[in-house]
Image (cartoon, rainbow, N blue to C red; front, side, top):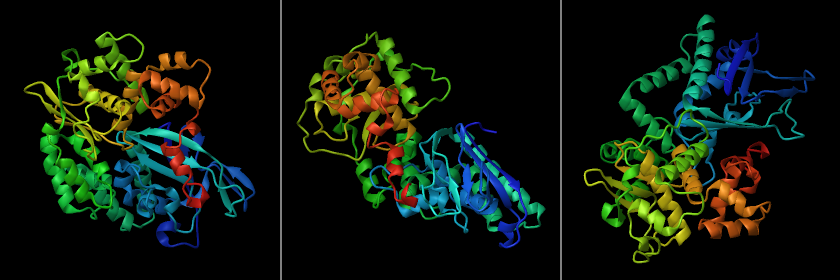
Length: 452
């Protein structure tokens, strides 16, 4: 059993429901982190308990139908989640007349984040859930637990003589697709674009699959998340129009080429970015303290004027990218918005440095976006620590974490106030509530049961 996320059921008798639902009636328990999602107060039974009377079949059916989107679709970059997104990611959408936990799953790539919110106080439902919980679940562990719950439900159906249900057919298809490389890639990209299976636009999917050979698999995955917009064809067209001649020509410091940094276990994305930034500083022999423009440009092998170049004012693209020319050991750095201020350019170029150090050789494009994927979070955390080491930020602030002090620190380290504030939150020096842009808070303000 995975200690971070676990789903179990204890079979019970039932008399008044359709067959598939009736024979899988169960006391269901869902555990997350160090708590129990299903801990509830049952007004009818006048009890508080950790499991809840539900049916495994509707839940397993929802998990199977939503499997690809649960595993690979991230939170929308700019818009609030659509009804389609919420139906695929929020357990309260399972339906069938049951009161389900307010549990939502958010994929970030190699991890799936789970957020559980207690029922609204005063809710008139007969069952009220009592837990506020959060956990980052390793992707493989998430798959293992979901697969196990579905297979347990199928085994129960088979034992009760129900051997040909919609769940059987859907799960058979999902397993077959996961076992076939081409089908699996298609479904992953389809989910990243925000579509149900078989609803994704073939033209867009074919283009992404074909271009993968040229720009690399990691780049295609990140680009797919960016194209989860009302007009994905137009967005993809703008992205693929990027040309290496559009960028700032550079040559990464040779001491950083082909270095393998041991990341060990998979901690939170920000921790990976923080650790990598410390390692790169050590390799380069950079002491603590803010990084001057000249030093950053020297590391990337770009002209110092690059941070203030206004020759391409107004140019913008949906993504930032490093286009690598391995034969010539040269990089072309393409900023998303050439009109950004110097602090914004410093931060984006440092995100590019992170990609240059950690990317796989097969990736010719190294992509920077606003997506909430693990890769992008690592970039942001790397840039924050590389430009303004947390030890130095704390020393500069002292005991004053006010808005004015953070603004002064941002000016000193030549980053944005948001970068400083997020850095402090990641290092547990400020509460998450001080940020208005984080994933958890965005979901807490959604009107689902007035909570999600």
